[in-house]
Amino acid sequence: MNYIFKKISAIVTSIALFGMGTTVTENFASEYSYSITANATENKVFSDIDSNAWYADAVQFVYNQGIMNGFPDHSFGPNNNISKGQFVTVLYNLDKKPIVHGTNIFLDVKPTDYYAVPAIWANYNSIAFENNGYFSPNYSIPREYMVTMLYNYAKRYKKYTIVINKDALNKFGDAQGMHDWAKEPMMWAITNGIIQGKGKDKNGKNILDPLGKATRAECAQMLYNFSKKY
Image (cartoon, rainbow, N blue to C red; front, side, top):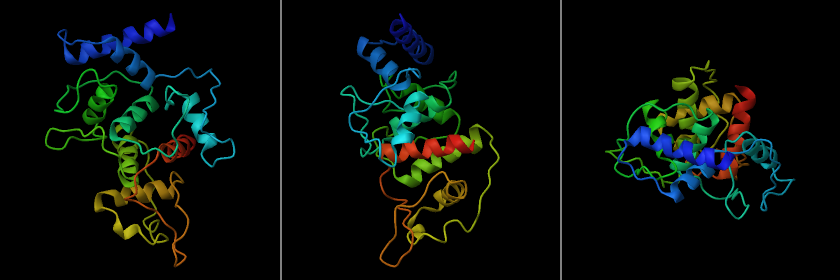
C-alpha cells in the first residue's frame, strides 16, 4: 500500500507541474519514487560500503534520513561521480520534498525524468540555474559546484546565518585554481567543517581539489557534516 501511495504521489506531482496532458509511465512512477524516497526505519546495508570506510557513518545517515538511496543491486556507488540531476534531487530530499512552485523551462528536462521536480524547485529557489535553456542534469559536478549549490540552499533558500572565515582558503595549495564564484561558498564550507581537504601535496600544503569531480561518498559526508551544523 505504501508503494502504491508513493507511485500515485509521483504521478500527481508530475501532472500538477507539467499539465493534464502529461504522460506518466509506470517506469517513471517507480523510478521517481525510488529516487526521492526512503524508509527511514529500514536498516539497509549496502553491498559496497565497508563499515570502516571514512564515509560509512555518513552513508548510513543520508540513507536513514531519506536523503540518498542506493542502486537496485544494493550498492551505493561511493566512488561514482555525482551528477547535477542527482544532487538537486538530494537537496530536494534534504528539504523533505516540499511543494514545488515554478514551471519547467529546461530544454533537456522531461516530465518523466526523476530529477524533473527537483530541478524546477532548485531553479525557482535560486539554488541551481539553467544555462541557455539547458539544465545539464547528467553533468558530473566538480566539488566547488556541489559546495556552491549547498551554499545557495543554506543562504538563499533556508536563510541560515552564514559565518565565514575569509582566511579559510589559505591553508590549501590548490585553492587559487577555483572559480571566483565558488570562493565564498568554499570558505563557508571550510569554516563550518562541512568539507575538508584530501590529504597534502608534495609541498605539504593541504589539497582542496575544487575542480575535481564530486563523488557520492563526498556528497554523503558533506551533507552529514552540514546536518550536524544546521
